Length: 379
Ligand code: NAD
Image 1 (cartoon, rainbow, N blue to C red):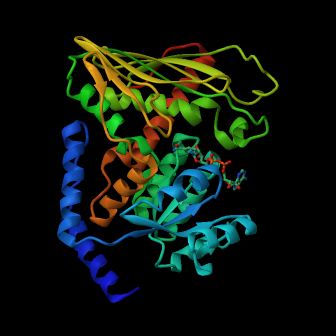
Image 2 (cartoon, helix red, strand yellow):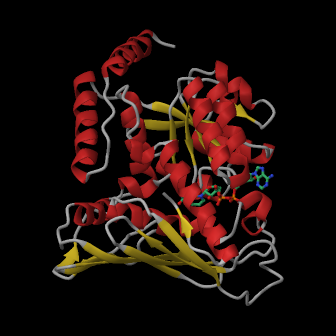
Image 3 (cartoon, protein in one colour):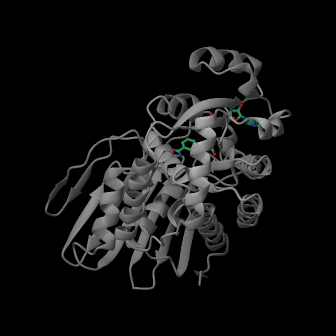
């Protein structure tokens, strides 16, 4: 490690000791945290980037994360972990990654000795998240893990505990938390700009093509479209209401292609009830597309449509269009997480492993509700 980097990290650890975690129950709290982090980074001086290693070079890493890491200001792609030697060659050339920063799944743990890698980003099939997050924490690295955090609540807890034990931070790959249209929906909802919210409709689905993909295998995916994109609908409702559901009912739609959907649901509907009386209805599907977040309040409505994809997102309210800058979601997310890490602050609650665990718990309850036909109490 060069002297200036060591000096910088020493400054950060000093800051970390006094940093205070802000609860993000309000949108103002969210804004305050990131404004403080930005001010802190300004005071420290610009130009430092954390090194990120991507684990799993599938479509999300190749098409979204690696290109986004060419635009980030607080982090950069310094390492890769892949089981495919030809991909390693291709990525080393394309992204100028030195051989000593390239690992496979067996040599992965040696990443512990590599100071060029500060953060490990796990982008593997869902059932593999827990193992690699825990190994990354044991290697002494901060971790970002793709959604869903894991396939069971128990695994989520083990991941959180492993990071805590290693004194490293765990973030979940919720890119929309740093996306301006989504943040505006949060503000409109949480600050009750249109009065109290009465109900929310939030749905996300697409037509899943390849019948052999891991997303259709329960052991690897943990479930069907709910685990993959329905999680965005859950997030959307929680983000705009700022409340946690108290009960849920759910129904599986009949399968139109039982052969393809042997192991996981094809389409699923669920309804949440919230403490203030807000209700929400959602659909998720691998049979056909749907993507919107619609909020109806006492004095008007606000919506995103599309709401959850890579963008550009589009927003309307009963008073006119939502006009916000279009950003690269993945770059904004990684920069946001790494800004907090660079500032030596604890990650705010909204982006931690705990937040990922909340959604996994809700998804398990949705499945239980659909399987039993009963209303499941959540609190
Ligand atoms: P993918 O199938 O394209 O890539 C998976 C990668 O894992 C491949 O490189 C594959 O070689 C590797 N792999 C290692 N062991 C494997 C095994 N036993 N079986 C299958 N693959 C194995 O998947 P993806 O679309 O890149 O998704 C990866 C993760 O990223 C998932 O958790 C997914 O939910 C998440 N994701 C998030 C977003 C988002 O918007 N946040 C978007 C897409 C995917």
